[in-house]
Length: 246
Image 1 (tube, rainbow, N blue to C red):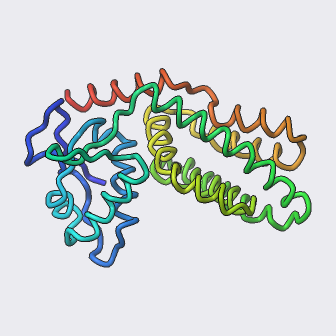
Image 2: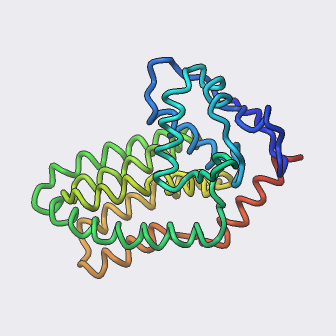
């Protein structure tokens, strides 16, 4: 995605929604939403930055209808906030936000993984799905394609939720997965040990197959938080904004 967003604290109206690569006219609002989320995770759209429907539509080279739908979806998921007479803005990507995403994801994914582990142990063929996502992740890491790494990472975890067989857990995951995608973008921005990302998922695969319920809870916590923490995420976001202003 070729991005030319203004990264000043209060960018002019004509520059705020620039920098999103055009997409095919037949793309749906979900794809628009995913592109916006990717731009936020990469620091191409900044925390607090205002989005103008008409300018986003121009950047995507599509009508305003799917853009309007995408913005509404992202508002409902808490990625964007809308205020009367002030417009639609990216939420604050601060330490409190990062901590809440980590904690909520850990709680949900612990229960999900414990359920998925029972399915995997009862039917080893179910492993083929996870292994295919690990292979995709390996290929993305080999090519050092960070957006693709993040998408493969998210797909792996979505597959675990599918295996868990809980409509409620899957609904909750879908509601917060774009927040997780933003975190992935921030985490991998300056992450050089890309092979380590694959190793983390191979280890999580082992945990699902071998550990007790308590061991799964520990393994999920290690995987979700890893070497990162909420303060680091907030600092990384600020650094990204500063770097892009230079």
